[in-house]
Length: 178
Image (tube, rainbow, N blue to C red):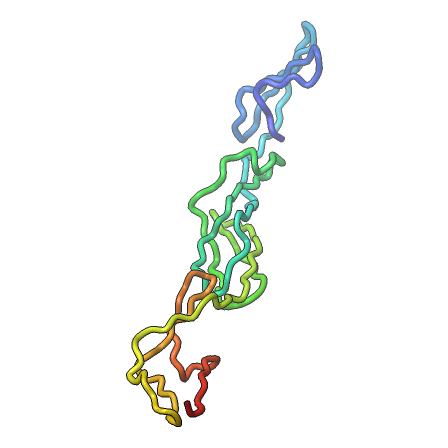
């Protein structure tokens, strides 16, 4: 039972309670010049779960994860969670940012949990950069290209760059004679 110290449910009625804290409370109902009092038991408001509102759910493989969520308390009093201030000081499970696809994350606060989904998309190569200088850049017809002295840096859409060597899988060059 949730008791507001002064509530008017219909014209001519007046409810009052000595306070809205948990415990046994005396309620007074007045109608016209008549009054009646009775006792009710008010249960303590208890946190039972969390409502998690995700502001960001789409991430890219190997992106640095930062939870962008708003967390509301859900109590045992049937009051809409958004009626309360959002919670801070919660914990969020760590997603595997190398795992492509949907993941369910758990938010914890004072022994209760809420869950929400994120999606991790495969990172996409944006550009390849040459790093260094070729040891040999002039050739005579019939010689084979020598890539010594250079390496590459792969730039991805997750904002990260990775060094890539010619012997890494996926990197190829023309090994025929010039």
